[in-house]
Image (cartoon, rainbow, N blue to C red; front, top):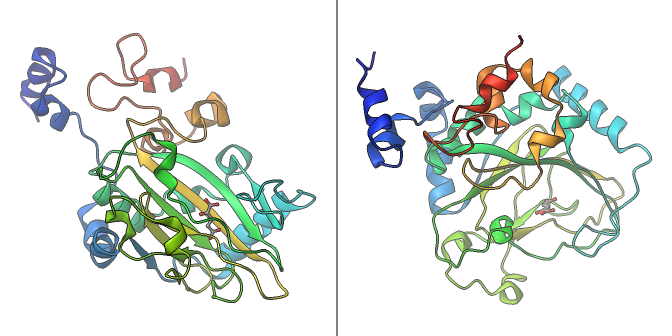
Amino acid sequence: MDNGQRGDAIDRNPFSAEAMAMAAHRISTDANRAGADAQIRELATLGFTHFPDRVGGAELDEVRAEFDRLNTGVDTSRSTFGGYRTRRVFNLAGNSRAFDQLITDPLVIAAVEAHLQDQIQLSEISSIQIEPGEVAQALHHDDGCYPLPRPHPPLMVSAIWALDPFTEANGASRVLPGSHLEVSPDLDAAVGATIPLEMGAGSVGLWDGRLIHGGGANHTQRPRRAIAVLYARAWLRQQENQYLCIDRATVAGFDRDYQRLLGWSRYGPHTGIVGGRDPGHLLRRP
Ligand SMILES: O=C(O)CCC(=O)C(=O)O
């Protein structure tokens, strides 16, 4: 109970640190935060980490089946960055409900919230199928889309779900440990210094948006399938416009935390409001 203090602080000055702290919302439980402790530390120090075996059995089969259904007949990308032998499907949150469990995985959310100070939203979700013969992707950092000079605090965390085992041979993502803290990363020099983020099928890798990384080359005869879920600070523009990606009636059926994750909430007392109110009221059925 806030005895009116919360309202008072926000009424007095919605931009004060006190009001911002009072309006903060955290999805993850203390137990999930504790369960993700090792990964939270690695993300901070190395800039990347992974949770082994987060989905398996029938669940993983269902995710793969939906992945394959959505990728059937999809052309490869037509850019060097996208990969001439890589198939991508964007807006997976709008296209299917099969990936909601990945987006909302409690340990992933705990790690992302811890890294981004409980200020998170979904930015983008896409499938990445690296076909045999694909070459290594250009190294980059995912938060390069935000025009801020380095150093800056973490703005994004990307999660990559391995639907096949990630190996050096089949194009496991390549990462440069510690590069999230580099002020002027040298992408050319990084090429020989990256390491493969190897993990089993059903595992999920995470990296800080500042980390130098890229998809690997696939030297095997089989595709490497992955789902990339990008989270960003809740006060940034999403890379995919989630308000337009998923129709409002569908969002109205989601639980409140998932609606928030998609951006249907205000951040702090006064960012993202509609008519002076939290946009959640637009999702309530009459
Ligand atoms: O597929 C991967 O391993 C990483 C892909 C990536 O970083 C990207 O497409 O931005």
